[in-house]
Length: 472
Image (cartoon, rainbow, N blue to C red):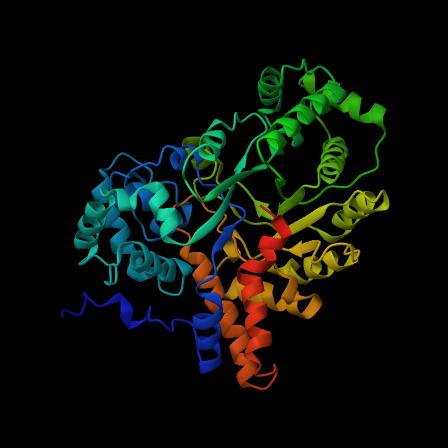
């Protein structure tokens, strides 16, 4: 065997990331066989409902994956091999050249987990093996056993929850509901485009919402009426979650007259001040969150991203192409004010807060404790490390903050937040990290060596808590 052709299994072993016998037993006996509830992702529902058969490995693995794109750019690979016009195989071969140099980045772990779990490929990906791996995986992808739905079922997935805009028809979700696909596919209502009034495309979006809802939107009240109709439509089609991607949760005092004035000012294409922008966002978010409470929905807030930093490349390629990073927004005071405003009316529904800046881990871990009211187990959740934080160190820091400031035993666990159909091994990755964390403390005598107790908590974090919380 040449130096460059090395077996993947030399480090992705059965005991990968499991550092002692306690960790190994927790994973193999308690975590590994639990089904997956992926309660937040960005998988395209049309590809699931149409059971897409991917043409080659690049189409299923590299297309749309801005994690890989950022790494390839850093390694000096030309954009034509990333998002450009190069043939698919050439794109993959360039990715193969970069992979050995992603050592210590989570991409290196994810890459080899995915090759093993989906394709039974036991080679390390590099320039010498890329051609063989591409041909092998591409050949397998031609089989019905590797169709989109088959890839999902291969990972023991029980529930997938995608994320849709209020104007979405949900036709693909209806199609899936009436199909024989035995994995539940639900959706989350994500109204960001109706909230961020300062967006350049806001008025064009409102026009689309008006058409879909059949409401003439010429006032703030009519905007809310249109959103209620879309909430009704989503609820009719099985939706029980909302999601919001915000830099931070704003909170400012306002009057109804002010909000109407701000909306009318925006329709006249006049510039809004930061104060006006935040007042409007506060008002519409409070309105929506009261709606979620009345329907018994769960609300999610993904906080802390600084998006589209590279204006030149965003202009060329568009959003979600790899130009985002961690923001350093102030979170605590306005978030507390917002949650308190809902709780004061007893209209705070189940809430999941996701944090992108590790400096704010303890802020969010303590914030959720302010609004647990004893009515629902784990009502307020500090969500799993996401985006830049869904790697070993980021997840460990989130788990430790939650353990120290709250109850890790009530945690609803991992989600992929991914656009890739090959991302489900990240649940395994997370479970191995959790089991190792608990196993290390069992070995050190910091936790009882009681597998019935600790194993039950591991299974709860892996699956049971999410099953109870979401009630899909």
